[in-house]
Image 1 (cartoon, rainbow, N blue to C red):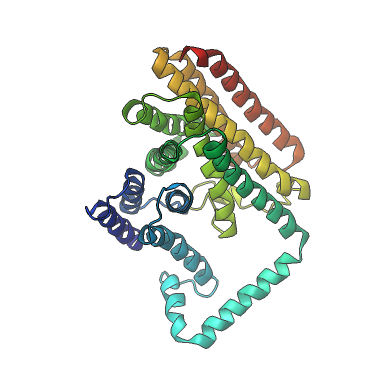
Image 2: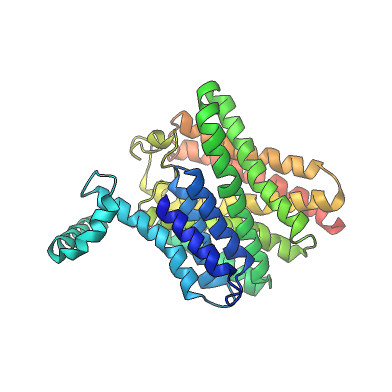
Length: 367
């Protein structure tokens, strides 16, 4: 984590110097990086989400590009990739340093790269790779398509989308990540049954993400039009649709370092996976969660504008139910990729998102 801490501090200094005029979004992201490094959060997902959001902002959403910032956000994922490559060659704690220094020996590095390309070539020939590739392209296309539609179709400003992305990072990494590492894993996993543990995790997830959105509505963007509100909420789903497949490409396990990592690492065949499930289910899930992210945040905004806590309570309850059921499925090793189980879960997500959307649509004229 020392490297991550150094990169975060360098990024903060770069963004805060007067000559650069750093943006609020990149400043906060680098601050997240520093906090994550200091807290020694075990999940690589946190670093990937932070850097993924930063790269998304700098390469697509920002009005101007900053090469230094792009490099700083790109270094941590590159370091994680080196770590994964190095673990195949060595089990020492300095594995990534070993593979980096091996560049002094071109023959060893060339052989390592050649072995990697040979392995990739063999994998490309398999049916499983084709199905995973279709799912990855579908999720990336969904994320990029949403970004284009929000900016060009609805006319949502990049700043609003950026605030939505930053709100998601604050909730998922800043609040939920630290609570998971500091409360759920060391305390709740030891004292609660799977049902109560999943319930607790669901409400921690909901309160973290929707609480972060509420802070932005209160302090940063208190007045939003309907397209802007949709853009703010959809930004969270857009980030997930882009980050999840990129993590898969990099071989990064989203649950790495968590108590349910071993459960999730069960072979897909044992979880009831089929080619159809591998190809279609990830895209369906990202689309449904996009709608859930948008509608739940919209109801939180409606509660704050109307001074009525009921819509927010409904949003938190539905959000917590969806995330809680997902966590319970990991705890109990459900065959989450079998059609029978997946269709029930997606029906739950669709029902929850549909209810929240209908309730908000009935309230939006009063905003």
